[in-house]
Image: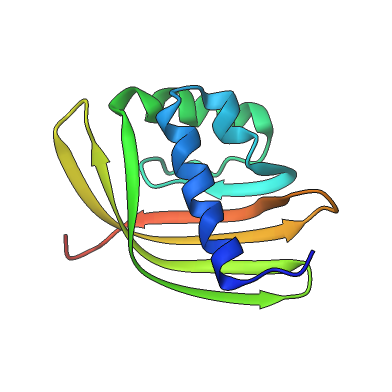
Length: 125
């Protein structure tokens, strides 16, 4: 599949929509079997699907949704990177958090799946 910036930008929307389901398994389905999650609200890297599911089980309790504020997309063959700034809203807490994010995707022949995901709170709020 030939990727475009629009194709890759839509993957953030796919991930965000899976957050809205409240089902950690649907979120983890966005990740390749061999992938790493460096999450926003945990110091523990998540490598296995079970570790990611554990993280999202707790993360989803705060009813998060994300909006991209700034992004840059780079595509090279079957690898694509979507990096930038976003704002998370946590409906259960009535809070918003500004964050940095990087998603690295790989085309597996059928789907673009996350192979590396880093998100961190903006240091200056």
